[in-house]
Image 1 (cartoon, rainbow, N blue to C red):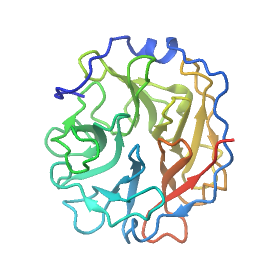
Image 2 (cartoon, helix red, strand yellow):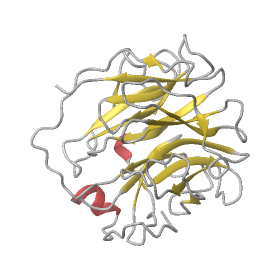
Image 3 (tube, rainbow, N blue to C red):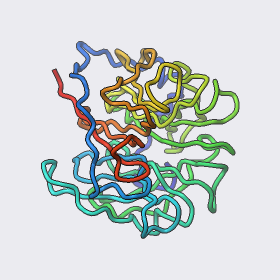
Length: 311
């Protein structure tokens, strides 16, 4: 994050310290039920074209996502839908406007924990370093979905001439520097897209990205979505052992100093024979949004939601 006067300065600890030396002992990690049968968000959200990269605000009242629907500025734009309460239906999606969206492609938004920052993908256009890049925008009022300021490219420590996409912010509250997880097909990985992480520096910028090898494979591993306590991470992959073309997988750890466990497929209760992609674990820790091309969809790719309960 660069250029924001309200950005808090953090003590520089470095990626290695942030990943392996900061411990968050857990007396008893949260336990959850299995996931419910996924529900299509319906024509109020999904169009006849392609929706992608859902994310939801901390209060659960604003749903952001990318869409190729008519009425945008070009390619995929980022849209937002509102609801009055978590028990109400979603309202008509509204385009975030020309401050965020351009004639190129914008998609897969993600918020900082405090709601002041939005990370997202953009491909091409002025300021681009390669294919997909990760950009960030700031807002002062966290409940105003149209107060976003001019986005800034995260720069060469995160972005490369390859594709760098699917950001997921981990606040690391009380433990160390914030971390940004994302997928990249840059050279030097295990194959296809791999999962990487960058630590925030004292000046608010982001440090050199490091691979997270225990989450990566020789195929494509993309859009990591980390739970707010840092103990669970979802992503999508076409790795061996899947059910469909691309599936949603999950990895866990006992504390933030532990390595990630071998990823586990969410199974046929969530995944389908088609593409199931771009998962997002909501701040409530029990709601998972994702995109799918499964049969019964409204359009080319729809947004779905599945839930679980804490046991």
